Image 1 (cartoon, one colour):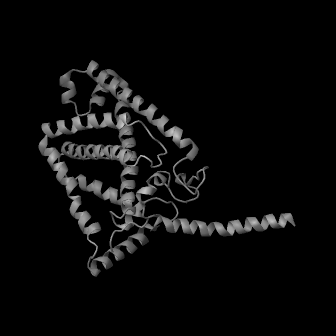
Image 2: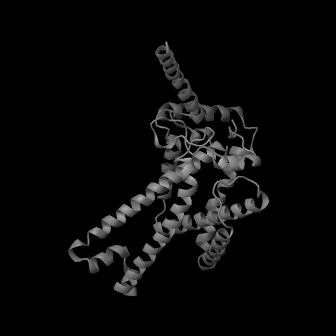
Image 3: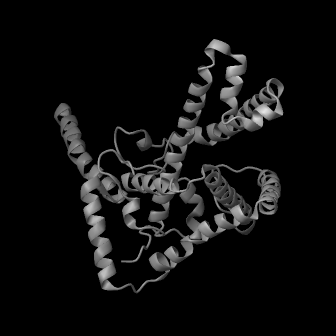
Length: 312
């Protein structure tokens, strides 16, 4: 069993793919909203509003968050000495204890809520990365399956949980943060560079949302400065991050590139996939769409018969 992608998308379909599903046909769930525009596209939101709301949300949120972070750090520097900032395990908590007095308990709660929000966003995005990778054939097809009724990618979420628990095996959380941060920023830069490459090589592709190339170019300039500075200041940590990233190369060659696998390996993967499907009650999304279409047929037939009765 090779991890081949089920849906095939050519370069000519790239623009259409940008307007294609972020969700699936699951009535009663947020990500099953139907677009008011032409075509059977389903996504998180309304098609006619997304083109205006998404850039507007970016233009508002990025300056707002930048403003809050900058002035929060100015407040820390103003109210605390450099020694207090360097020796504090949680600068915001120390800041609250120094200035807020009896209501300093607000700071730990605010930090916890902020952390929870960040973890919640990471949980959604990380699991969807595994989900998308499995749909492209880069991971086992089990990770591309969703719950039959709730349309949640349960296998991808469980896989995210397992990989997160593996990260806790390290004894130094700060080193782990440096590893993950370096790898994340490395991929951010590669992604932005890919945007510039596709704008140059495929200028005629449909782009629902298009921005000036100056934004990714400026981003890449700052990105290159941060990456080079990190490599110079802490080459061991950055080198270990690269080693962790390159550890996926053997997995790619075994799971994707190697087509003629032993039959015993295929049988084992198939058995594990079926057992996990039974435990998690998941199927491939296209099966959910087919089931929903079949379930809607009797309803349509009843509606049509009711209209005919009224006409008579």
